[in-house]
Amino acid sequence: MIAGGCAVGSSAVVKGAGPDDLLKLREGPGLEHNIIIGLPDGTRLNRQSCVTTNGKVWCKVSLAERPSVSGYVSADYLAHR
Image: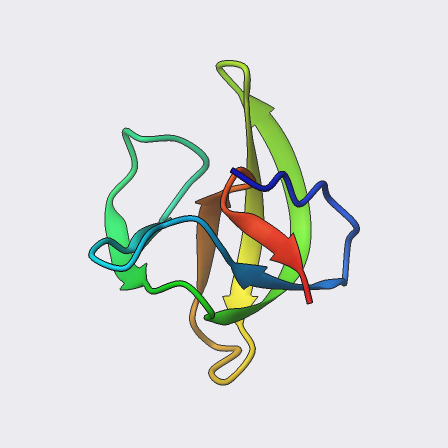
């Protein structure tokens, strides 16, 4: 997995979900939150902020192509673009 870190306002890309899976964009930072949409590898995102929940880093992001769509993803699946 690629740890993307958290540079607020930076651009990121989904990496590591795999060819047959999607990274879940969630309503909040954690697995207990509802899924908004699945994002394939290569999806371009704008990183807004990050928080640590239960030892995992979650980043609030919006879709680069549709900024009105936003939520949280695991930082483990983000790479700088």
